[in-house]
Image 1 (cartoon, rainbow, N blue to C red):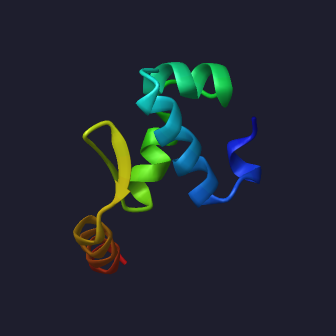
Image 2 (cartoon, rainbow, N blue to C red):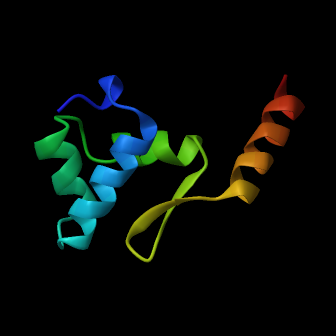
Length: 74
């Protein structure tokens, strides 16, 4: 499965379904997406998604904070 060819919503939906089956994020990243541990988690975090109660959800506060920090460092 290629993470980069999928829509963000498709990736999140797939990951959340697999997490609900009891799989670990490390397992999903390494086996299903063929990437190193933490790669997809970090990418989702940068886009404002956080893992809460074993599901990835969008966190508006984090996204706004990241945008402000980017403006500060420019």
